[in-house]
Image (cartoon, rainbow, N blue to C red; front, side, top):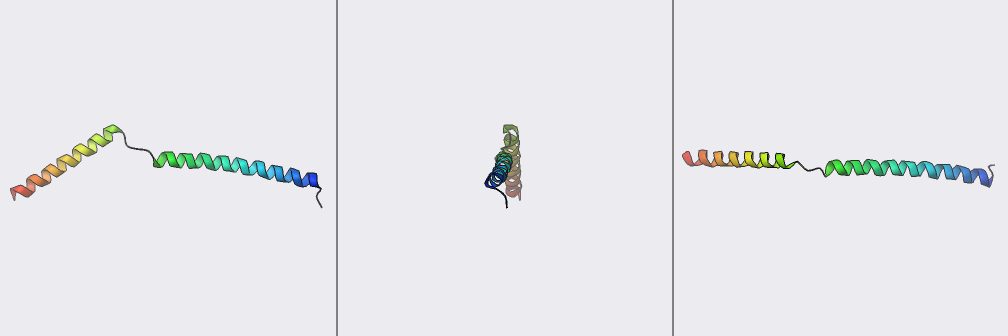
Length: 66
């Protein structure tokens, strides 16, 4: 049967290991959040807006010519 000191040492080792795992998980969660919250650059926003405007204009043009 392990002594109290051995049990305490085992417990401290497990706590240390769990703290490392928690820190790793926190870093992983931060990376996931950063990737999910990424927004497109302004150039991409402008291009998408222009293309949408052109497409809508062409649809209206074709619809009114028929």
